[in-house]
Length: 301
Image (cartoon, rainbow, N blue to C red; front, side):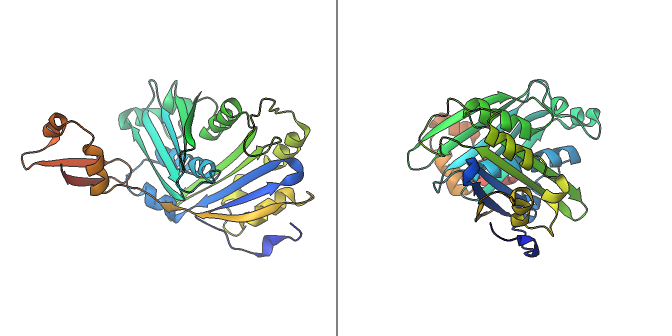
C-alpha cells in the first residue's frame, strides 16, 4: 500500500475486503452489510435486541466464511442456550450467500429489558462453529462456551482454542428508521502459514501479534460504520506505516436462503414412508416452514 486511498469513497457495502501484512504474518477481512442485512432481517419482525444480536452474528459468519478458499465451502454458526431467552441462533455462509435466524421466547425477552447482556439472552450457552470444506476436504467443528460480553469474543476464543490461531474481531451495529447497518473486521496471526501446518505454539504475546492486534484494536465502531470511509481507507488508517499491505476486493454478499420445493422433496425423500404419511394433511400435502425466510412450501411427497 503506497498511497492513502481515503479519497476513494467506494464503500464495498455488501462486500468483503481481504488484506495481508506479509512482514507480520497477518491476514484480515473487513465486511459491511446494509441492504442484504435488511433483506435477511425483514423475514421476521424481530424486536431490537434480537435484531442487534442477529446482525452481529451475520457479520461474524461472513467474516469467517470469507476465510474459505474453495467455492462451495460453508461455515455455520449456531448458538444454543441453557435457561436463556434465546432457544437457537443459526447463521450460515456459502460462496457469498448468507442467511440466519433466531428462535426466542418473547415473553422472557421482554422481562430482560431494553439492553440485555449476552448472558441474560443465552444463560449458560454454547457456540458451535462448523466448517464444511468443499471438494471432499472434510468437515470440522469447534464448540466453546458463550462467555464474555459479545458473540465476537466467543468467536475469538474459538479460533484460539480450536485452531490455535490468535484472532482479533471487532463488530459494530447501528439501527435506524432507514434500516440496519452492520460491519466487522477480523485479523489473524499465522506465523506458520495459512495452510498445511499444525499451529502448536500459537502465542498471544508474540511480538508481531501484539503489534498488529494493538493497531487493529484501535478501530472505532464509528469508523467501521462510516459510509464515507471506504474499507481500503480503514486498512490505510490502521496499517499505513507497515512495510507492505496487500489488499484484494472480496466476495459480494447476498441473501442466500436455499429453500425450494425441490430441496424439501429431496430432504423428505430420506424419511421412511410411514413418517411421511404422518406429515401429510388431508390433501396429501406436507407443509414445510423455512425458519430462515419465513416462507411456507407445500410439498407433494
